[in-house]
Image (cartoon, rainbow, N blue to C red; front, side, top):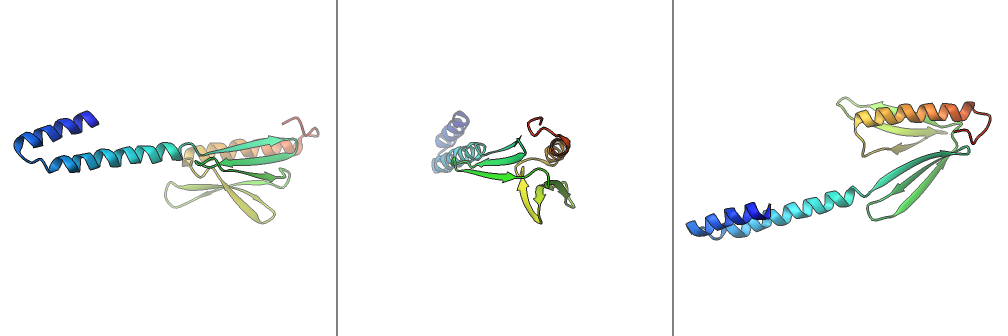
Length: 133
């Protein structure tokens, strides 16, 4: 990108339109900032673990802040709400409260995750040994 911008800037300089070079530099800076914030946001993650009768959702923000939420799988429901357009929201619901998960996923990925979570929660409920899941 820098090479292309430099080449375009050189052409404008030779033609006599040297003030354009400053605007070309702004484009490179804005593009660099966009990549920086995009890669920074990509560091955020969400982990879902089902162990020993406990479902834990761990959220790690892009800054590294960690939050953990624990749920009892026996009462937990997986709810997938579809909107008018191609958007959908995935929730864990228990005792009248709901907790959104997978906010960064697409509609198809949320549907897959909802199916897998629902299947694992059913296995956990039906299993007599809590370590079986």
